[in-house]
Image (cartoon, rainbow, N blue to C red; front, top):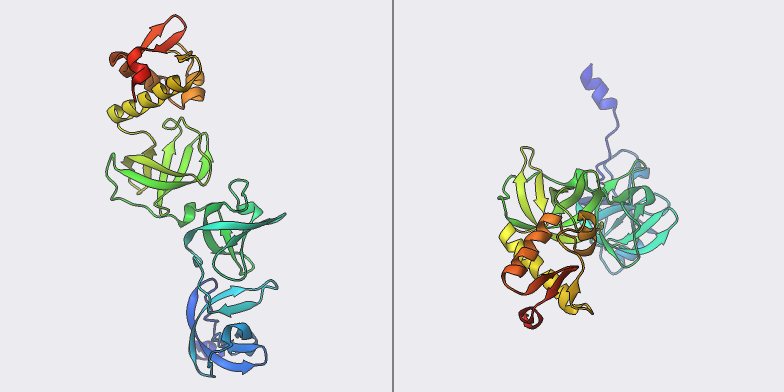
Length: 300
């Protein structure tokens, strides 16, 4: 009984939307070559248009390596062109046009890739490049999304204090900054670890705090304390050297909010950096803040 039922079921299409695959030329028509989709219905076959086969000796029965996508009327089309990414993967793609319903990205094909409005994580700009994942939508079309979380992978090999590079892909102030480490792995800067302003699309360098049991990695944009103190001290010293009055009105008694707004530092990090400058006699304390010493004026 099962054998009879199986024989009555039509073959399923072998087409892989948004990916490269090898297909057999079923027949040649006036508008191009039709590629066998693997079903018993010729209407399922995929068109390889004339502009793709011009100058090529394509014959019935040939096996061709093509990329499959849909045209503006949602018809399946094959092309010899090479895309920058395929469905199910992540890539950094440039915005080439913007419409009310979304943005169009250059993905290497003559037809641009749609990033629907509902898949944007921020307001995108023409000429800017964003990290996106490619997926097949409910209508069978390849689209892009800036929510790349589901495309990322766990990683258990990062070591504590190892420096990594990644791309910011989502910001949730109550949780933190979501980072795609190496544009491939789960990363998060918890909200108690960042004081600088970030935006979606920023490429950053961060330090591994720990790797969780599920392979997701917690990060800090700050170096180890003694290294970060030197970096922060240099930044504050340069600020004083370049301002008109050669003074710093922000002090260790200033509010954490004022310190963060001025320098992007926690109050603890600010006091540590100021302490280093005082110890090296590059600044001195005044009634209303700090000012440069003679050594501080000449320090580079």
